[in-house]
Image 1 (cartoon, one colour):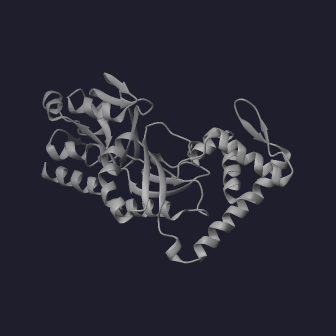
Image 2 (image 1 turned 135 degrees about the horizontal axis):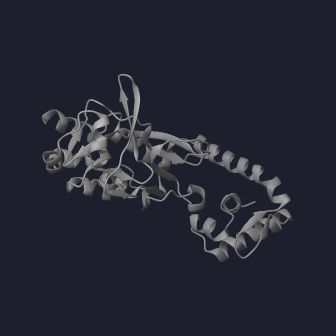
Image 3 (image 1 turned 45 degrees about the vertical axis):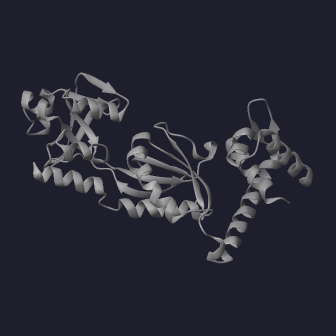
Amino acid sequence: MNIEHLKLFVRVASTQTISQAGQALNLSPAVASAHLGKLEEDLGVRLFHRTTRKVSLTQEGEAFLPYAEEVLTSVEMARAAMGSGNTDPKGTLRVTAPASFGRMHLVPALKDFLARYPQISLDLRLSDSIVDLVEGGFDIAIRNAELKDSSLIARRLAPDRRIICAAPAYLREHGEPRSPGDLSQHACINLIGMESWTFATSTGPVSIRTTGPLRTDNGEAMRDACTSGLGIAISSTWSVYQHLTRGDLIQVLPDTPLTAHTAIWAMYPSSRLLAPKVRAFIDFFAERFGDTPYWDRLAETSNRAR
């Protein structure tokens, strides 16, 4: 029985499309379909119901799936047992990440990463849409969010500290809020769905419903509007640390932090089959960012210098 055929079978069972599963394994739809046909021929059963849009497992396919997964797990464990000489990180690594974070913090580090792991090549997709890792054939997804229940495995790469900012010109014209309650008298720029700002105070969390001239679904647009003096906004320090350093933005209410449970996460489908190339990427960026990433250090230095 061909191991590559089993990999394809498991991938098709997850994605329910032969073309997407084949693409993830660098197979054309015709070749992928032929491989599945050969597997069915070897087993003497039909594994999938096929339609023009998708495929679904037959009863026999559902029964065979856990055994196929177990075989693949055993193969990976056997390869790992052969010693470190055969487990050097190599191959194409498919990564999806938020557009702004990826451009600002992943891309500048890729030269060092690829110099350390020259046998890896990267397929990096930058998008603010949340993609399905299995369906898209990705090895890793970088996500900037509060971690919720998921079938995916997650590792925290860095904190995502969020602060309140405004341009110096705005503060000169409208004054600086001294407490969260003062924000009701200010123009606030919001990400859609995040109009309530919650602060940690000595008496407990305080939520302020903010309003202003602009709501947007794009963090860079919000930051740039804030920099132009349009109003006060929430931003992640990884997004605004350069603006703080230059003095284009100033942190507002620095002694009243926002409450947030967000972080920068690396997410992947399974820990049992964690390929060396996946582990290498995650370990590299976890080490590079750390518990106090460089953007937080620079943002704090700018705030103290104010």
